[in-house]
Image (cartoon, rainbow, N blue to C red; front, side):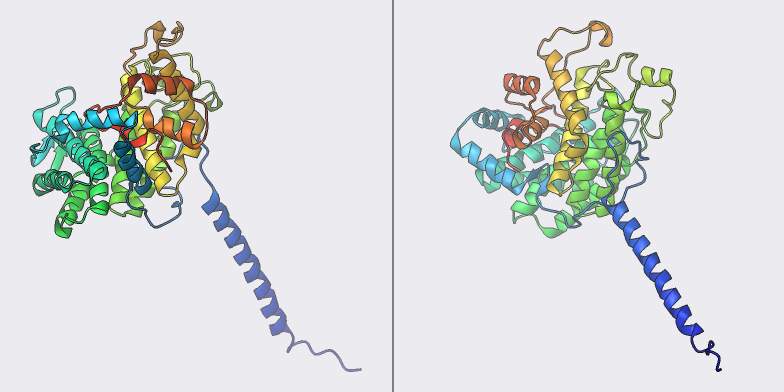
Length: 420
């Protein structure tokens, strides 16, 4: 009886076996890749903000898309032409400001040296000139008068021709205040006006990349958190203007790490999330970092017991970052929705005169909230239908929101009942 031949069959069996292993390996790789691409960090997760997470999609940037998109600019123009409130009053306030004057003169310097608590003239000039460029860009959008676009270009060109660096202890914060505003102004002008020469756009882009971006990358975990959030706002805005996906993704990662360390939710546990990479790593250090506060409730901010003004900066920066990401197809709002809602409601309630409990900052918080609510209010109330009664009441009482002369400007005009 003949035996079954074996040698000719073995190579085929090995080939089939190898094929099965390859298919299994590919299936596992695809599954792992899909899980990585769809995973979104938990709102309370602490992610080292120096390391960007998996890049968000879509990959192409939408322009204009820094704080305002084209639909919002169209709505702004329509609101101004209608003469309806609250936009009519907001427009009049902006148009009457020193930033809107046709003879506004920029004051550029080569090095902006900003020591803490001193506010040298060059630092004020840089921030105000950026606000002026943004104001003129908004006036161009509202009226269609080319003189406003030309003035915005004149201001931006003056600085890009001269500026080389930021120095001293407040360099990062100063660069973030001005840089976020420059990016908003430049984004509008570049994508809605045909009179900014390409070589000057390139020079301005180079200024943002070389005199600003490096300052935003500073690690400031042990500083008050409004620094980190304002620098994140600026980095994301500049990333969009420069069409730089790496800068954009790094800013997203920083936002996701820092917002949970600034605005508290009970789901974080008995203590707030520690700032990533910082030295506040024990219960007592965390309480000290939170200005001695020992009782934590939903919406409390790291600087609530410093003053509400600085919490306002953090609220504005958080909303600006989420709004710009929203225009780029990334839902940061969804990731921090409850933190943001709780934070604006808590601070608005006490800013309106609500009875302050003794456990909150010894019963004596400094109620100095600025013009920082409109972007958050618009998204929560108008886009999502989330009730924010204290925030709505405070915004209506303080309208039209003007400018803090730092990095918040004219947001009743730009974002009250804004589309998108």
